[in-house]
Amino acid sequence: MQIPSPIEEFQFNNHKFKVKRDDLIDPFISGNKWRKLNYQLAEATRLKKNHIVTFGGAFSNHLLATAAAGAKFKFKTTAIVRGEKVDNEILFFCALFGMNLIFVDRTTYKDKENLFEKLFSEDPSAYFIDEGGAGALGQQGCEDIIHEINLPISNVFCAAGTGTTAIGILKTLQSKYPESILHIIPVLKNLKLETQILNSIPDAKNYIIHEDYHFGGYAKTTPQLLNFIKKFTSTTGLIIDPIYTGKMFFAMFNLIEEQKVKYDENFVAIHTGGALGSLGMRNKFDF
Ligand SMILES: *Cc1c(COP(=O)(O)O)cnc(C)c1O
Image (cartoon, rainbow, N blue to C red; front, side, top):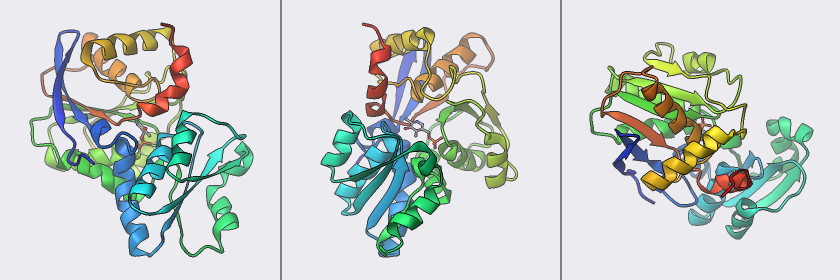
């Protein structure tokens, strides 16, 4: 595993920027999913629980990361997968890493804690990790992203699904780089991030939530976004995906080009990983 992850410089549309390459941490335990698992696995170990039970959709980067980390660090892993039984590349890798897959319908899936109780109350080794690795320990891991950076930063960009990563980043950024601004790009509609941020960081400041870059909602896309991704990846060599990082980089360049942010060369984009999860979207592209 590559920790600290490197920070590299890129250029796109004549603008230089830096990328914190959390996508390079591990091919399967990718990006922010390692950040979010790190302290939760340590806590499971401390509690002598060697069976990780977690939750996600059929193309979840988090399930894949948990399966790979489980195999590497000697945990048994079980995934509760949302929806009817399917087979795809991600679940294939999960199974190969030894993860046990349990498919449940969408209604049953909703009450995760209850489901965990019902299925694993007899198993003292079972340890609950929420969907996407969300939670306080997940957030703590994301605080490390900024701890690892030792360059000037003016603006930071990151995608938000649950918002765990953004909140962790903001916490460190505020104290270490009090002049810099965090730009959060929610990838779904109606993410109630503001309240969540203020609950975790009562004196939160210097952040902007950009609500207009979800492209219709979670895993929704448009030809404009897909064309951006094609151009971006083919000219930078960075794989970005249509669910998370594609929307973030689109937003970053849109804000720069429309001069809604004051550009300088100290923009840092957090590459949260997710290349393999985008396999579920490959049919949206026409080549
Ligand atoms: C899961 C994921 C996110 C979202 O992270 P949150 O902490 O849930 O906001 C962002 N980018 C990628 C690539 C992801 O896999």
